Length: 333
Image (tube, rainbow, N blue to C red; front, side):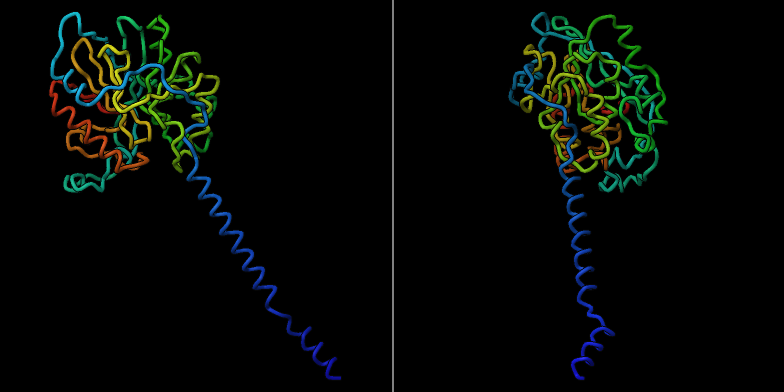
């Protein structure tokens, strides 16, 4: 009789252990899922496109570069290139991406976030011996008018603000007017606004980037690396610069300067043009205000501290050699 009573009591008051077990298992699954997502995001790279060491570029020291700039070589021994600016498009993006609004100087100036007016550039470098090169790519008509056709998913278009691009001179138009083959494209970095002219550029043209640019892991690349991969598809391996300061052609006419921070492989270019020395900062500095006040970019950079150090390095270079004209990444100085 007592045995029957105990069994009945067990059936009327089921154990809570199965419920607790289900809750614990569910929590473990949720934690594991979030951990997997976090790991995936942390290991997302800029592009899966292959890379190789650049055959161009001879590394030199800071001292050698300073001596060359101080000497102000003239005459036949000084090789000068032609350097023209291609203003591809007008654009609007949040100031908080372009400038570190938490910097004391920005706070002191009362700067607040808003849609800032900028421009998208490419630069045409014409070397007297080695031919025509682009620094960055401008904007192709196809990217601006039909972004889905070059791998931009519909949900990403409004995030990029492509609808705010106001075309001025497409990469297609530039190449038609050039009527000569490009020998290469020197990229400041792989962000989409700097490679959006690629659909207009023949797929056999070599592309040069900073060391570590393609393999950089940053969570935001989860949204963009599919488009980057599409834009680079069918092209040869990216040629990565090897060194901090590179004499690109070996004749003192153009230098690639590794300026990590905005991205791992961000590269500035120092060009001896027919009008004098020109420093193209790339997105190491986006704006006039940022350059004039030595304030680094904001939320668009993957490593703000490294970006600050690279900007300071370029600032000191320009101060030591005031003959250098400076062109920041997205505004006319």
